[in-house]
Amino acid sequence: MALRDIKARIDSTKKTMQITKAMEMVSAAKLNRAEQNARSFGPYVDKIQEVVGSIASGSSSARHSMLISRPVKKTGYFVVTADRGLAGAYNSNILRHVYRTIQERHKSADEYALIVVGKVGVNFFKSRKMNILDSITGVADQPSFADIKAIASKAVSLYADGTFDELYMYYNHFVSAIQNDLTEKKLLPLTDLSSGKSKSSSYEYEPSEDEILEVLLPQYAESLIYGALLDAKAAEHASRMTAMKNATDNANELIGQLTLSFNRERQAAITQEITEIVGGVAALE
Image 1 (cartoon, one colour):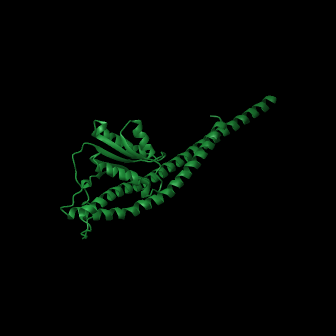
Image 2: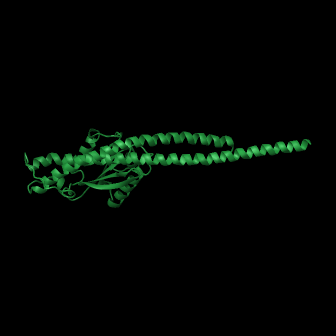
Image 3: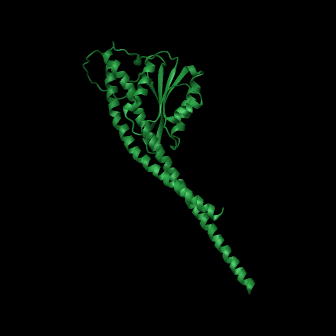
């Protein structure tokens, strides 16, 4: 490779490294806020689960359609992905898992429906002509509940009106800056309210248990969706930060290799020139 070509590759790789380094720093800043958002929302979900679980288990008369399992004719899948790539295996892992799960569980497109968050997921399922009931793209990096209220409410109402008989949610759970866990969670029906931390709290209900559950259960299900989205956003920023750090490290390593090659080629050229000069002087003598 000519010296000029090596120099051009070094320059272009340095420019790429500057971009990946900047993206790494941006993702790190976003990760701090996203992690705080996800952790601060946890106590709210825990408390509303405690209240709803106490009402549902403490009353024999309080029954709600969201608490009762029914024969499954159609399954809903709520899938959370990102709007952009450059995040390592963040999108591909979850999409591959959901696609394989649907292929294994269902023989017909009439047996399932998808609700998708993120442009990557929407494009993936559309390209395979899979049944998407609803989707949302352009969700903010630090989303508020208002940003996803519409799609969360629709997911709950589609279960309530019998469009599907169970709803599973798939997202990447944030563990640390270098680890995300693909999570599958059965969102509806709400059959695990009594699991987890149970507290012997006594409540006085006004109005009746049924009327309270009518309001609280949809809010609780929507809160689970919002909490999963906050968790997934933290995982997305962590994945992108790690991917950009790896890209920066690889670019730096490549620059080192190219610089070594450049120096060797230049040394060889200088040696060749010296040899030619010495040979010319010897010929004149």
